[in-house]
Image 1 (cartoon, rainbow, N blue to C red):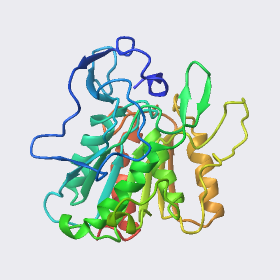
Image 2: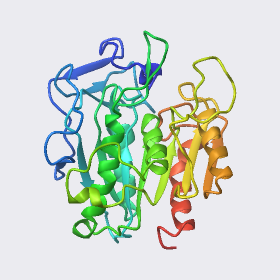
Image 3: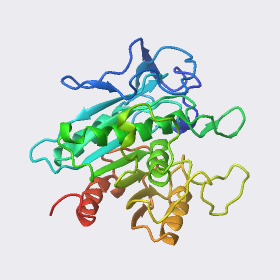
Image 4: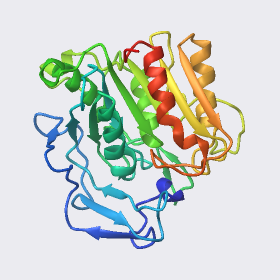
Length: 319
């Protein structure tokens, strides 16, 4: 993904996308589950119907196209059951896209295929976009924070809903984590630091369950460090409130990330260390941005093995 991650709804043609007049659908055999029992809270007017698009030869990741989803107004979860022995662990995955769209295969379905192969249940969240959280406005040349933060509402709800159905899905309710990429990495950080209070009014019994994840994996996260004013000061986004109750965190980023500066991970790491939160951070000299699980010539793309080892270290997956 090129810098269009920060702007991507400008024009489909300019981004090298070929629109299909259909909404995104999960792989055969899997079903999307609406995360809200009725209308989503604080629903915003849509600029059009949900569309799923696939990039062309001008916009590839590791030599392959990726799927881009826009205009999501009906958020859903797709549950991927584990393959082989069930560890009881579940990971809710937040794809990235600058809160303008969702990279649903690159940072979603492909991630779930890896997790389930390790005996981990995967819950893929299709959250509301565009402009559903802190996003970069190309015209204004600055970050804009919408109110209410509907993407964050969807993320909190997904955690509680998953925990409420843990027994049904063969999940240990004490082993539910989150993993996010880019903007989704911000959601992983925010859900890990803001769980005492919901961003919406509870709607049913599922909201009686905690929305605190048991662990969190932000991969090349964005929106954690602000530099709109040209400042180079390492200062965490004030919307992220790290406390001693923040769960264990795994951070990964490339120092040459051309979309989200490596300072995004650094400011979060510093805040976590100051709060004495268990954190493991891996920085690589090269790798860029938005590579997902796709293998490239850079060592950073072997990161899934590091996550697997870390999950064993924190006692989520047995040795």
